[in-house]
Image (cartoon, rainbow, N blue to C red; front, side, top):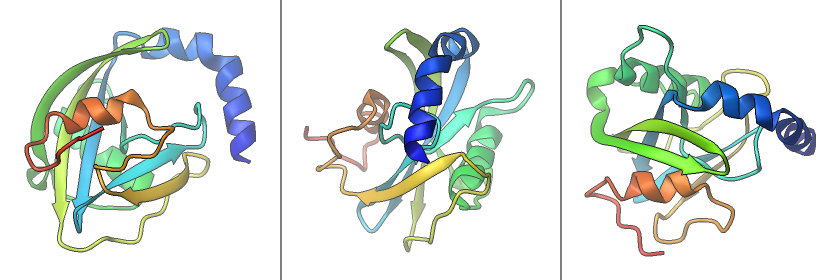
Length: 153
């Protein structure tokens, strides 16, 4: 199933670039037990990413981050539990957009699941010091904003 998502992604890549370029998006660093949560979108290149996504017209970025986190992982949080870390421009493989990065600290690792069908293919809790090989450059850029998570690679 995930292979089908990658094939569709590569065929729709030109359209995705048009739709996403210049947009504003959210990313959330979810921290629990000294590990961060990564997601692998069903429709995508197969890279591990931070949960997050688009911001609807008129929607506040912090509200969008909380909504996307719930849709992608089943984790519910209030906007005031998200720590804003900053904004980073992202340019890679023909994509250019802005990420508003937030951090959420949890006392225990929750069970995670995709709320929406065909959105997230897999989840991974990992130490920020040992990120997986096929990891989106967005992850390292976002982690650099965090004073609580150290990136060593």
